[in-house]
Image 1 (cartoon, rainbow, N blue to C red):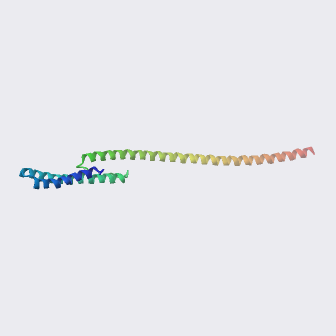
Image 2 (cartoon, rainbow, N blue to C red; image 1 turned 180 degrees about the vertical axis):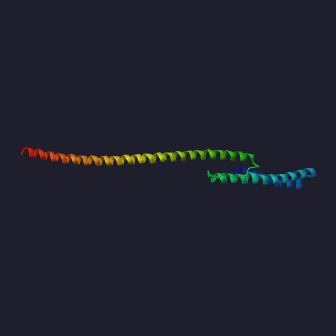
Length: 160
């Protein structure tokens, strides 16, 4: 019995069942009986209205919220339920704020990806340059070693 709509509909049904019975069996005044019959009919119309613009509308809104897609517009006819229309407007406003925030995050992520790619390119360039410099230093070391050997040979030959 936590459902407000269920409790209200139970009261409506009880009232539009009891009112005609009361009018027929217990009301002696024709005017009083007619008023009770009219009220019973008004309750039936009211209950149908509440079912369509209350119960069914709430179910549609709940379904739309449960499967909310930020890229799709929520289209629900709330023309005869001002309270639900205001609530839905607030949800749409909040959804738009979230969508804009996500777009901002995506833009930042793209920028970060671009910066990361540039840094990767720079690191790759430095790695290549370092390998080239190491190769040059290794070649230079070999030449210096060869030169030392040649100078040592010349020096030994000069002393003999």
